[in-house]
Image (cartoon, rainbow, N blue to C red; front, side, top):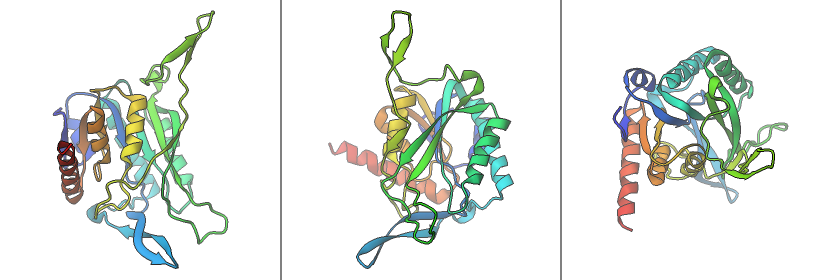
Length: 266
């Protein structure tokens, strides 16, 4: 496996032919919401900036049926199982659209039922912006998404974290650092004309600090606008990414090169 390389390819096909292992997977796959991207627009109504929706995935609209989406996800996790090092984890950011949350929870249940993985933790990510729900009298505005920490069922008690022993009792019981399953992080960093609400570089940085070590090899199978690549670079990690869409691939390359150019100025 070539380290620090971005593949403009289908991750399912590429993972099957790559040799080598990664220490962790961190990704935000398509939510199967019909390809809509929600973002703060520049439109002002009555002095208030409003949210907008756009369809910008072009050739790869995430409009699968529920069964198709679940089967695709199962295939993805089967590939993760072959490429993930012992005691590694999959940090999987997912949410749901304006429809019922039932599909998301059904997906999680099927992953646990049909693959080698189970959930070690579920982290709530509180974003800085969210689409206001002004059309429903009984649904709340969702400002949180989830990051599910998947580990192999056989490694549930041994998978890697950076929690340290703080004290040990007279009976030999270790007590560890306290980390909460709640992270506040911006969801609007590095916006570009493809994705108005890019995946959070700050969120990725905080997750990597919890679950990985410097020089670990990190994989993002759905790189998008490249936030995880930038976070990994900042943290001193090795990185491999996949992005199937040519336009997204080119945009994240430009974003990453611009980021490195800015670093050289200081």
